[in-house]
Amino acid sequence: MASYGTIHRPHLTSASLTSQTDDESKRKNRNNFKLICPFNIPSSPETAAVRIIRNLGSFGLYYTLFVWVILFITLIPKRKVSLIFLVAMTVVTSLYLLLLRLLPNSVVLHRIIDKRLVLALLAIVTAVELILTRAAIHLFVTLAAATPVILVHAVVRVRDDLFVDEEACAAGELVPLVYKKKSSDAESSASASV
Image (tube, rainbow, N blue to C red; front, top):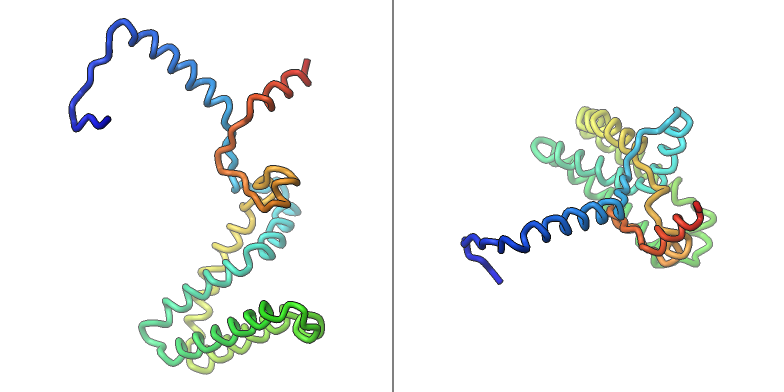
């Protein structure tokens, strides 16, 4: 029921008893929750290199879109022709990726022509187009600004602890950021330690 700005007075007899039980339940609830943070500083340079490689593979599309949006925004004010070339190459890349998705059993598209090679060639052609249209400074400033941000994200992002277990992974379920321990888990860990 809504209070509409009025202040309700608690009963004096049940207030002290209720506050004690509330404090105890809050302590129990705090002990049952585990906060899972997807960011962590690596312990060694080798760990950082492994994370960079793994995260570039996993988040490569998002990193590319991040750089593309920054480049798009920097080209809007003065470089209209470069912007048109960028959009045209984006359409060509999107059509190629759609063709890959539409023809999943195509031997030519998946085995003979490597997707990474085609995407690298499209990126090189886009860079050459931007250089020829005198938008090279925009490209280099965008890459200089976005690369450190991407590398920091790739180093500190941890992917390993985001899945519940193998059964949930197979079902494609992710763990929520706040994970509540089940009472049976707590009891089994307590009985295992005894």
